[in-house]
Image (tube, rainbow, N blue to C red; front, side, top):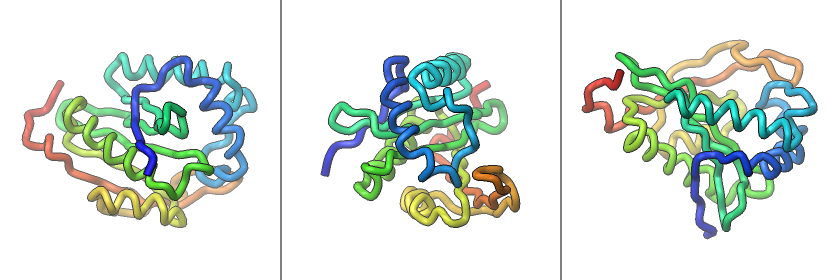
Length: 180
């Protein structure tokens, strides 16, 4: 088993992410929104990373990459962080197709849960999966997420509105007082 790490995304990750996203573009068309061609270039990813790091600086996100053997193989992040009475964020992740089925995604989710609790002090994490994405649903179940509803025609991708299942996980940080 190869080790899996996650870390905060860095500007220098742009070329690697562009390469991974471009390679899997057609494979993931059903799962991701349509993007302009420049999104799949190092320059496009540099712009995305700058925006993600700005959100991180504002306390609204924790944008990371999934790494094995010193190589970026995907992304993981906690976005749309809400403070006050909510103390929650949304978990999103992907690993490039050559690295799927090797446990990297599941290990990355486990590491992101630790960050959500220990660094971000969140009470709750949520995630969305398309109904057909059984692999992602299995990972969420393994890490204690529970499904709590289905949003019909919730997400537009690959020319159609897609139904999505909503997932939730209460974190042990729940015993802490809200951070404002």
